Image 1 (cartoon, rainbow, N blue to C red):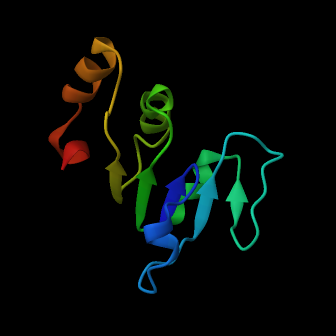
Image 2 (image 1 turned 120 degrees about the vertical axis):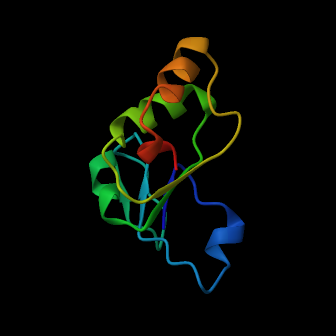
Length: 97
């Protein structure tokens, strides 16, 4: 599992979840026992990606993950602008499933 921004305690404390990598946009960020990257493409090797960043970044993150073939869990609210909603609704069903 990869969490975009800080992993939630429920994930860190669950023995059946392995946090493979954490994306954080600032290179200087560090956290003990977590493999942190500032390159979102490093996240593409995981089984699932959890987007738990501020809403203002959701659209940007999903665009960067547009070719990702695994599961993406997007926290709510998903977007804060109508054009972002319209763009995502017009994506193929394969991406939205």
